[in-house]
Length: 307
Image (cartoon, rainbow, N blue to C red; front, side, top):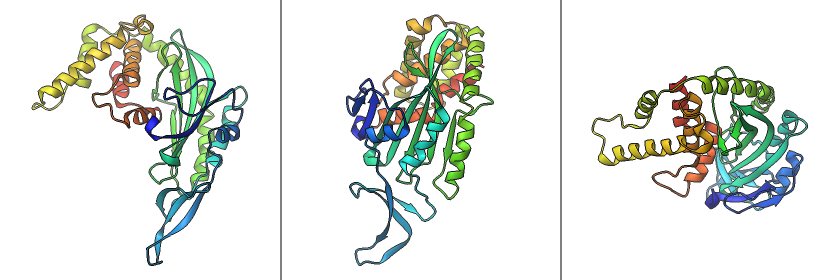
């Protein structure tokens, strides 16, 4: 993320990349945006050819403070300003919530806000609930909001999609985006329900036995190449992934759940959140951070397999 980081604020602690401003607190989204350097507007401007002819049906999204072009969008695209998109979180989270981080990536094309909601217990472990909010100004994505539980003991995220409660919500940049934001308020107001369901799910998974032979079969189905003509490199990568999983599975904070479905879920969460990829590109950290919103395919597969 550091290569694409532009500005940001972090409450009490520096980010892993050491960039941004560290503050003591940010009580409102307005204050968080100001401290993060996000108190600017997006202005829509016409686009024209070198000869002066206007290009119909398209506009440029331009940042008000420095005229930086954030993206080119179609006529149906509706701008959602940073303050408009983030302000509703003040009403959702209520008293006692703390804004943790906010910032800008890729020259303002993507902005985010993270707020700490509550503390809870998952199968005997302490966990914290966060509300993560992201908006794009280049036309590449929608306004996205999600609830992200984090196990305090190892700081790994548990982005689990539950059967009856939404974890995430998206709103496209179109004419009805404001109504969708209003709808998101209602959906995310059910964060307490998600917390209860997640706690019940964790308890059930902690009680569900998972024998070694079952776990081995699950890992084979997840990691082994499906192509009969798989290369030696692909097979070796699969074995390395399984070895890395077992290292996570044996970690002190997860070891107490060994032999259970909850232990397997936490080990996979630790693996996808902390382990290095085979190709550690500059964009990997940002992409991994983005999975806070979308969840991770491997974690989804593990959850589905052990239930």
